[in-house]
Length: 298
Image (cartoon, rainbow, N blue to C red; front, side, top):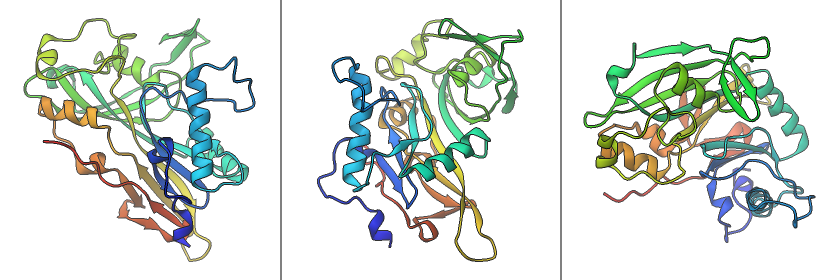
């Protein structure tokens, strides 16, 4: 049965190459930077921006590659600049089930962020941010008015560069408001995400510019892992937690290497785990990992 979850054709398209995991209910991609997670295939192509066309292309490619009866259903969104785990449902019943998990905050969401600030920028090694957010004319800010929405982020310092004011944070997103992580890191923790020129209050340090090359229009925020509630058909313990991790992009890895920031292979390679134990496939779901580890030049 696991063979049925492999791509249905060998000439895999550009977008379908980003798929990292598939089972009988979902397909998970490693979203590239610059992709807007929304589209409308039914809308007139004459009036659609190219960014919308790209997402429509992705849905069509996944449908054709996995021989789905209809287009896959987007269950959640990632910001245009964010990379990482993006979940699509194979059918409408699965879409309703996983949308409910997101709405009820059952889904665990782990992010990695390269931020501007060395080890001394952080008061402790970890912490919680519970600053509410306000929205006005497309802008997001910290707010205390009645219109402000509760926002919750946990952060942990993984490592800091010994040669430049750069650090790697692991973030747990408990709520999913627009630009939440960008605002919380820039205005609450005062360590903006590398490449974020919208919420940063100062320019890039010369020390950072000297040690590495920063791509234009690139924000180094990666949705590293989604953890979902899944169920077996038989057995005494039917419920289990499935974690799906998307590999870190190569340019993210390169900057960490240039800055002397070590990376755990779990984040470099991505992968699957069931109740915290690494696995290569998930027979209970007819699920399989479909991504090879990245090959990086020295």
